[in-house]
Image (cartoon, rainbow over all chains, first blue to last red):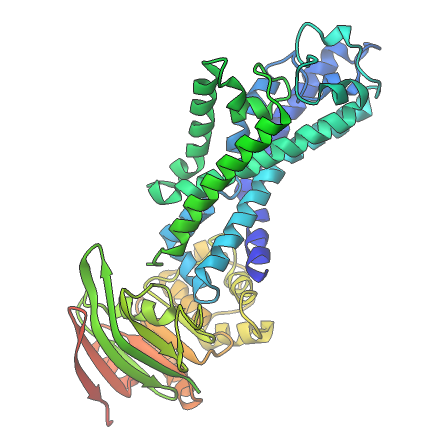
Length: 264
Length: 216
């Protein structure tokens, strides 16, 4: 437990964590500004239409979900690479076992990835909740784009929009955490800090594009799952299944590397 | 009181033998010197004692408990292996406080004392990135000795230190040995090593080739 607290204390004080939050917050605030400028006086617009997750009016939504792995990995995912390269891991591993260090790193990287993605979405939700009325959206209004009946949790979208947004914030946070873990799993193969942070982004984009190139596999893309406005409709079972498979592979790879690693 | 016993320790990395059937016994209250050319295996032996590497063969026993089997890390050890490395955005005090949170029983007083012992000011507001080479080295030594662990492992501790600081550090180490600590020092300076050590192990190509007992 000490090592988890140690790592989290380090992680949340990192400058890169603040930079990530700043960038993502700027993006969600830009979306809000654009929406407010155009629909601020419109009586028909409601919270769930203005929230960045389901706001299909501007590119900010797409940009946020494309950059999700960068926001998630920037805060702390590269710290394992940095510790190994600088020799800081020696200071830690004379005091705790390498397995404790591994769990400390996994917990802190997952948590920072989760927070870095969830925080701007929550911030945006709070702000739009203060600016727009909290009615359920008219079904016809959203028919042309965004959330359709076949979409994941579409019933909640129309009946309990806040809960719908919170569920997607949770999903996106979990995907953010997973991106951080992917970075840990590829650390050994990386030669620079930049690559350790950017490889999850590449994997996310490349698998997203590959899966989306076929209607058969489009629903397996993490990029699609993160965005409430999915072009390929997925189900909760497929989402959980895909997430668990990626998580398992990532954890096993990282665990095997950490277990037999000499700290040189 | 601590005792380190190394039995037939072999370490291979990518089929290259770094440590070749090392047998040693070390006891507390003594300063042990490791001497050898670059790449002879001194640092690797220190890593093995600190539990940082997994032996290919053989074992390291600390107080009769086998490392990586009975215990995962030595229960009371402090080490400076190769170059000191700390978080650049923190001060020396903050760095040590953070690391001390991983150990049991190291208070703020212990940290201040360790910093003062090596000639650093605990109140210094400069971050580690602004430290000179000598200050970084001193912080590395302070990290190894804070809380006065039973075993202290120092790899080239007097590197980058000025003459005055070398005298201070040597006196501190002698004082710690008198208080019953087991100290292992690797140093390229033959005279300094002979001055400090009660016993010197000469390492060549991963073997212990000579053991000298310092009677002075």
